[in-house]
Image (cartoon, protein in one colour):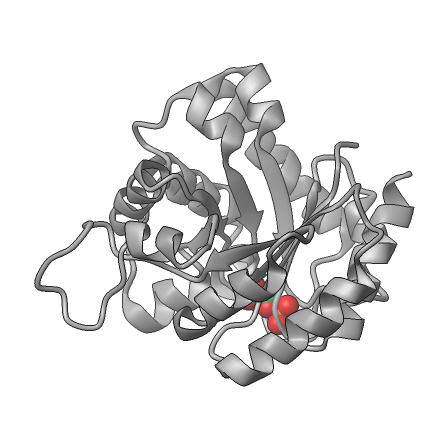
Length: 255
Ligand code: PGA
């Protein structure tokens, strides 16, 4: 397997002061880890402090969303170039909380992906089915639709740089992670589709993360599945020791 990619999505947690403290502690804990890509995603207001505190370390910084325009009359929004200037190099797009709580559509996800690339940010695009959809056997159909529209117009070269996170909505924040077999099945499906649409070299270079109740004690078996290249971690990334433990175990599981 390739180098694991472990990202922490802090959601609406942590102030600027909390962020500075976290990064100081966390960077020391992972200072010797050179074979894992590590990313943290603080709230917008803490992006700049996070990037400053992480400077010269092996920790990348991500925004949790962005607006697709560079600037304009969009009260309350933040653009790709602004996020980039603050020091982020990644951006999470289409998280299920954005989709369900803030009405983000697949078409909006697509515009945001394009805007992120234009701003030289690496998108981490989230897809995933709800429990209802899984029970109706619509998982693959939902993933196809989210991916097809969300990644419309991308070149193979752009896809190769992208990160896609499979996050079954029923597993997010519930303590109920997908079984390794369920993750492997969904990831295998995503990889097959990406190969069909973008060609094998680009699809194989695109990193596929699993997200939904990832913790230190389940990361190893999840990341050992084929086509699982890493994890997007919510709750368990809020404590620097917990998150560092996930980084260590992802690395041990893949050597
Ligand atoms: P969780 O969240 O790890 O707390 O389930 C994952 C996510 O929302 O990305």
